[in-house]
Length: 45
Image (tube, rainbow, N blue to C red; front, side):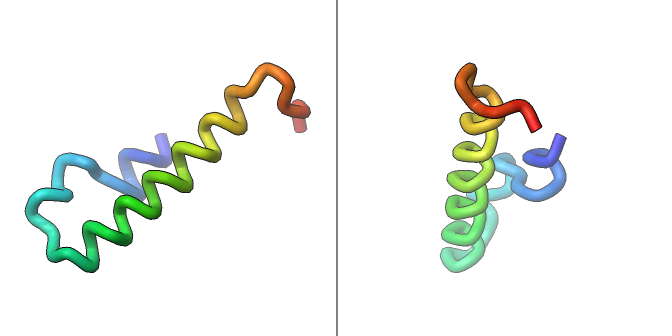
């Protein structure tokens, strides 16, 4: 799955602040994408 290769929550605590911010943004984007894919009224394309 995309989330395991792009954003790994297990390493966030060990990252410098800038990297944590990047990861949080990435996670938010992926989360929104996932919700979009899973939405029942989303177009199937």
